Image (cartoon, rainbow, N blue to C red):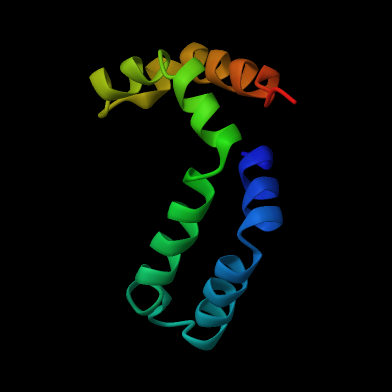
Length: 93
């Protein structure tokens, strides 16, 4: 999660700032008022090569989450495996 926030802050600063301003300006209705800005920020982060590589290499554990939507606690080992995998992904230079 920390890596995702770092990527978003570094490469999607404008989108993140707009979303933050919207949330601060709409404390009672930010979920709906700022929805399109949240999507814009998510699309920006998802387009980054490191995020794409993590999706390619570390997707397997998400099968458990799809199969156990009512009880995601059954997938704690899978989530840990995903996080370990994501930590090791690097962009070739």
